[in-house]
Length: 274
DNA sequence: AGACGTACCTGACCGC
DNA sequence: TGCGGTCAGGTACGTC
Image 1 (cartoon, rainbow, N blue to C red):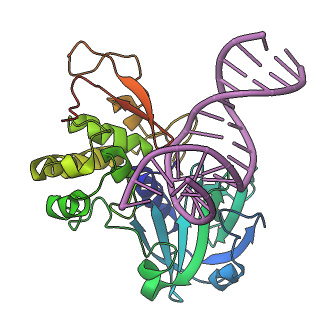
Image 2 (cartoon, chains in turn orange, green, cyan; image 1 turned 120 degrees about the horizontal axis):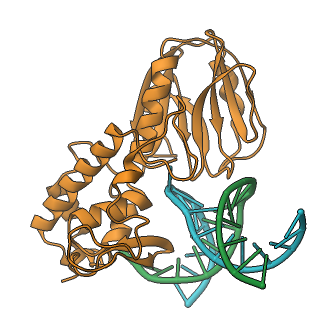
């Protein structure tokens, strides 16, 4: 599921059903996720959900006892609203609400993470204190971005994936942002001009917002908590389009390469590396 | 600093 | 049908 638009979509869908509801019981799989499921989740019993927020790929659910449940979906995690009777493989946390619907964290690969912290300082908790501004925050702007990258010797794709620089962009949207900005994902950061930084930042926000408006991207059989699928995958211009025609009518085809171990899609004609 | 491999996991898919 | 290989929307760690 999990880049910024998908996390935002999940958050909104669960908020719609669960805001104001009280947790009357909970259970866990007991299996280790990225970290062990914490013991202190018991503190959520009889607590009402009062707020949802998000930073980058981290989702935060606030409770009335000033505790915040931080959830990271990893590669394969998802949140569902389910009927009480419905149970599936890889359900790792089930929050039973007073409306008899369950909020369920499901994650086959178990790269996700769950942590319960104090609401007051959830943003400075160890688990996310080192991440940069959320890609949709105003503090992620061209000036900031240029300052961050102007002396870096790595490539643009790696920059966009680096959550310490900007939080929320993952492998799909990194390719899409480079394509839209007409800059090669291989371009070295210190060679990127302030003007290009403007383009990269504004295209990042534009693409992420468009993806949110379409309910994110659904690869394979992923669905949103309400059972609907995201639609942004139908608007990919680069991602997963290897060997297909570049949509800029340049008579080239989209290429697939590997950058820092991740598949990367781009048009070597339209996306400049100089 | 950063490139790179490896590790953490399960499941889907493909070729044989 | 089964088996082995590869790949997957993420991140952390060690090593060079």
